[in-house]
Length: 341
Image: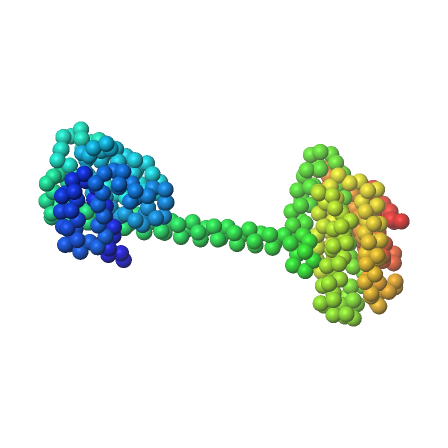
């Protein structure tokens, strides 16, 4: 807890004798940081309103004379309260005038309290102590608010990182299954409104278990990364979504793409993976290959996302069943498999 006598006090009075007598009184009571100013101009040079943090720490309470030449105490009080960096400093007006209008104007300007001249030492000390206690509470609250704000900022930053991590697969660097599902539902609803086609390609790495068994999981992960990069380089339109669907399986969402266009991309994917020439002794070609299942529909109330996915899965099964390293395309509407050449 802050010792009140260690807090800083500024005495503003155009009478040098009054400044000194007040300073001596406060120092005799143990206050170690008492400053004086003979004018409002000098007071503001001490307060330094241009430096927020410094200003708050520099002065904790002000004893302000009401009647001063050039700029009076009430106007000075008004200016202090208008400053974001100074407004929390409590101000006690010191005045020989006790007319109701004068006091009303002082409180309206932001003064916390007042004492009459000549100030009685006990009264002045009690009122000052009350002002310093208030300032200490304000500082503590400000500190807690800043700490809370910083914690909130850190939490938001970590949440953004976690959100990013939840959408990016750690092994391949492409979208996750969660991101894939979200994007697929979103594109389903959008293309349904527009009456546009939506295609989906499900991709499986052929004989991948045999690859892992032969070369080890680190090489398996490297293989998946290379495949993912090749898929993403082929499906590069802004709306295309390339994701790791699970294990060695990938999915590509192709908005505004008919079956012909999706089949053409699937054929390109087959070629891209073959061009990688990743050795695989368990493959008929001696290299890593993939199989693709293509499904296309114009989303409407007669079908669902699940039907599109199951149709693509069926097409993928047929591509695998027919010898792998190939693609098969099916339109949801006619459900007739079409081999891709």
